[in-house]
Length: 147
Image (cartoon, rainbow, N blue to C red):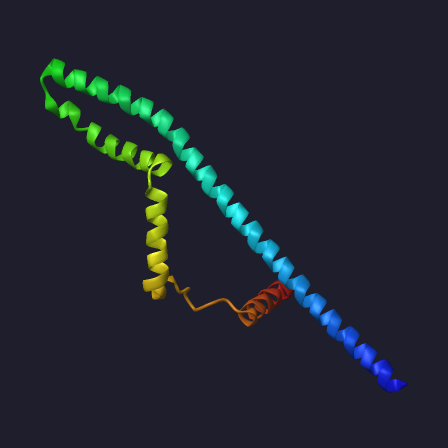
């Protein structure tokens, strides 16, 4: 009778462990999906901001380019055209970010860094561990207890 009871308990324990493992995996999958969703929303917001900024800056750039060109022609001084050069770089960058392939190029470069330059990504003092966090927490709590 005791053997049957312990066998049943053993099976229940095994089932409980499998359930807990499945539940932990499901929770991890949900967290990963949530993080990815947040990342996608932040990227979409960044692109939308860039497009909105481009509308305002494009208007400014157009007016400035026309005004500076007219001033250079009217006064016969080509120096009036020089401010157009840095403004055109800013305009081009914002256009590329909002409508071009800048994000894809950045993603490709990031993947390249992850694959070939792993040493540049290491944190000072290495990866944070539970032991390091506990040690810092204990030191901090001692600090606050002493005062």
